[in-house]
Amino acid sequence: MSEWLISLEGTEAGHQLALILAILAAFLHAVFGALQKGRHDPWLSRGAIDGAYGLMAMPFALFVVPWPEPHMWIIFAGAFVIHTAYKFLQAYAYTKGAYTVVYPVVRGTGPLFAVIGAWLVFGEQFTALQWGGVAVLLMGIFGLALYNLVFLTTARDTLPTALAVAVATGVFVAFYTTYDAYGIRATANPFTFLAWFFFLDGLVFPPLAALRWWNMVERPALPPLLLRGFVGGIVAFFSFGSVMMATRLDKVGEAAVLRETSTVFAALIGWLVLRETVGPRRIALMTLIAAGAVLVELGG
Image 1 (cartoon, rainbow, N blue to C red):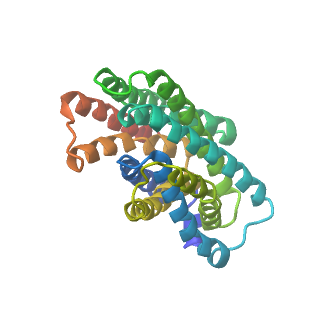
Image 2 (image 1 turned 90 degrees about the horizontal axis):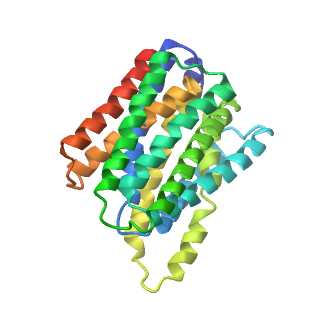
């Protein structure tokens, strides 16, 4: 399968497959966000998810995919540091601010810096129409965050901290998107990068989450938490794997922007599954996000 995927790089078929993978990643990222949003502490949820996908990736990394080339170990070390910092910032932001405010800010900041990173690292150029699409998409995402902010009734005292950390988290989203795109292109077999990434990335948060759980006065039941981690681990595999494969097949910047339509899917999941009220204003903002993504694709 890896040979077939590699043969599509730089072709029209590869471009179309990258588009499908980026949209799939957006949907799955929204599902992933919904799994993190719940009664569980975000640090515990992250630890359960990371532990699940680390254990699932281990046999593939050790026994299935080709062994990484020597130069890949430095790349894995960099990815390990970047993703660990990102997850610390994300968990801290979720503890300080409402999910509906923090999530759009993180996802809105990420693609702008990812496009800039793709230009600096890979020499990618966006057309005027594509930059217009990015602007429209960001208007929708930040408009959604502002709308949620106006009607927020809880955690307002910690909101400045939450917003600052959310912006920093978005910068790290762009950082890891660009860096990981470089990493998955630096190895002959893309599945080698994915298997070893998930295996190594799953080493940090499980022991931290276990220590946090042990020190809690009222410890949540483990079976529901572990089940959430198992489901989240599978979703993470396909979500992250899809967008990383898209960045190998086609432009990094386009994949990063299209993935941020996850905010549309997140609102739809909130409406259809969580029974949250959407309303005409949110629908209009979601339409802006979708329109921006379409312009980015048409402009390419």
